Length: 184
Image (cartoon, rainbow, N blue to C red; front, side, top):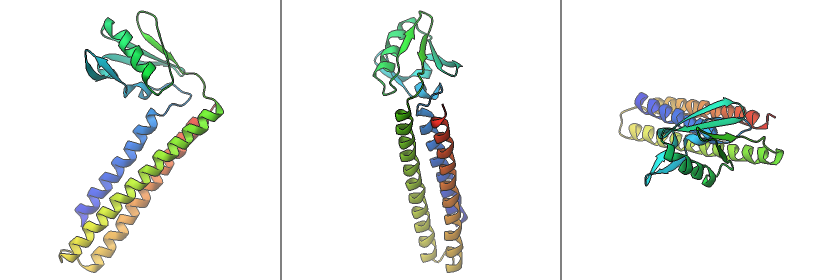
């Protein structure tokens, strides 16, 4: 029973961590390397993650700099940024690419909050699915006479506590992201 609970707890924590990663990709008014780290660049015919062919830095809150290690990579990185759904463009000064992050409009902020809310809801659904699978595993243990009915009840109560904690954590992460997005 403890193994099932521990497994479900680990899966729920990973789900919330995944939510944080997704939020890192959401553009706020502040520059972040997470915005461009997930970009794939067509490097010599191979889709390559941007951090593998360039160094990415944030010199100030409104700028991201990308310094390719290969001089030939400037144009393909610029193309990858242009074709991404970030809505950003890079300025090439010969040594590095600079991406200026413009301030967000009120309408765009509200759209980003809606997207963040959607990610949060998907995370909650995933956590509930983990709870359901865990409860089914506990019921199977009880059916196979490996645990008693009292143990099953205790296990389900514990599973509900894990679920509540994971959902509460996801909502806290969302509240922080919403505050960051709406901040001017």
